[in-house]
Length: 137
Image (cartoon, rainbow, N blue to C red):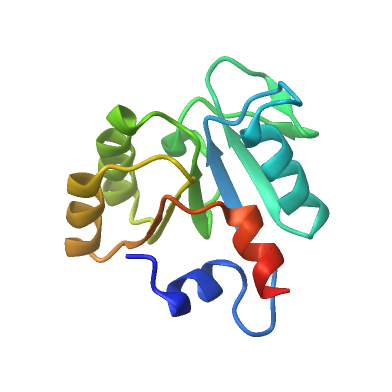
């Protein structure tokens, strides 16, 4: 978990090729970290796929009720949900064959991370994707 190479790969590798991010828990509230972090990533070329059943759209993108409903497989699942929701997100990722899980800063669920990694999912946890992107620029 949190290996430098995994972080670099999730952020586009050495070439810094933007990725597609499914943002679970993306809010339409501009003051929420999920919004301004996703907005930052979008401005840096990342495609944002909002996952929030309570929203129709955010950041100019249609919102989806779950990962299962997404029209394409995202490169990274970026999570802004409470720790108690992480195991179910890992279950959904396993069912869909998704390979990269990024759980935002301040959110930890060691058991879910271990289960994800044992199943071949790369995990970054308790790190901010925006902070890491800025650091690697």
